[in-house]
Length: 232
Image (cartoon, rainbow, N blue to C red; front, top):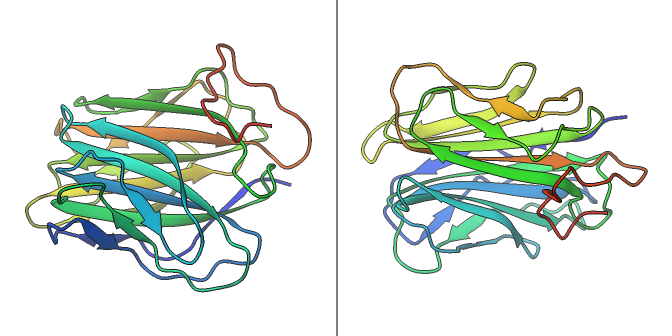
């Protein structure tokens, strides 16, 4: 058995320069945990996500000297009901935005995500890396979100042995790109290297989350770095 990550619908991208962005509609299975991932430029406020069920903020990160941000939300799908994720900023407009939702099954926690650890990184260097608080449990699944300001889509290569779930970007100004990658099991490293497919060094922000496999208690990594109230 392994944690499974399944796309709810294609990643959306927009340069509407507005305070509210609408993602692509999709229908989960009853019981799915939904993870909503957002990359937005020119806005770092604590926005919200809506759509069919109550969505909760899991993690937020600003990058590019506090100009742009990435956000992670979760919801529990109580029925096989179509949902359209909508991201709304707390204040002001965002110049561009990508929205993507993954369905999570096979994870512990029942009605909420069971996160063993969450780690983030920001920078401008090529080959971005996120260093985890401790080694990832090889039985667990991982999701990574990375967004970059300054290039169009197809600028990231997923970590070795990870699957690229989606990547999209704005082909016209304001240029922006977001990628989501995951691995159901088998990861053991304490750092995850994201390799660009070009040589540019644009501002980026990244989040990596480790999801506990269904069954059994798992201790947090050294230093208590799981950073999540959904730990069991």
